[in-house]
Length: 281
Image (tube, rainbow, N blue to C red; front, top):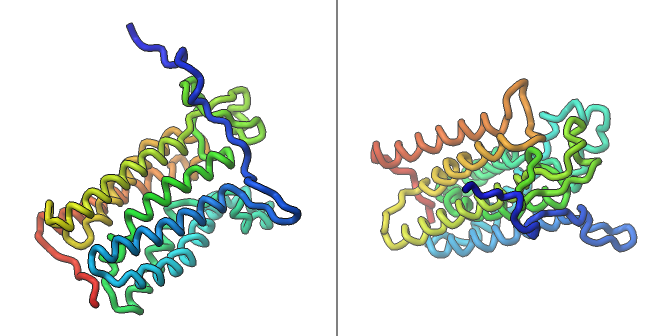
């Protein structure tokens, strides 16, 4: 007999307490901002630790983190705003209201890559080694940051009656789905997926230190690109608020490109037995 999941206990139903953590006079601390700040702090600490294990100067990662924040956050917002321009054109004052949500991880990655490339050029160090050290921190930060969508009641999926369903307030629902109360918690799906990718990358990192297997520079970056993109590809298909370009979901298109590039990179490294430069000390 088939299991009816809708009859299971309701303990896994999610209801957001709202976007504001605490408000003291004119000072408002929002969950979204706290999570982003926490992700950056944890990411810098982790990447510095990984750098030490690879005998790379950890100060490089500390300096790089400033560049990544400067490059990634504005790019993430710009990416989102451009694909939602019809909404922001009539409310330009909301363009800078990043604390209300509305940043795109693909925009952040693109901005971060540009910043890292400039940093690597100026410091005369190898970009791919830095990317390998940042990749585990990045995916861990993504797993944490996705909970900002929960507090903002955004980035949810189609209506569902599953026991881990997410309640969305009426004012946050798409007009065509206003009659539904519960939706797929796609923020949770992606957060859990990102944690699995993080576990894979960390496992590869430490096994690589032991030579089991021997990892070439660039491997972790390529594995990140493939595995994260695979998860985003199917999770994006559940969402109701995807950034669109005509009939196409932008995140799915970018994810497909990421999978192809990541697999091509791994093939270049291992099948063609090529090597990328290491960090110059």
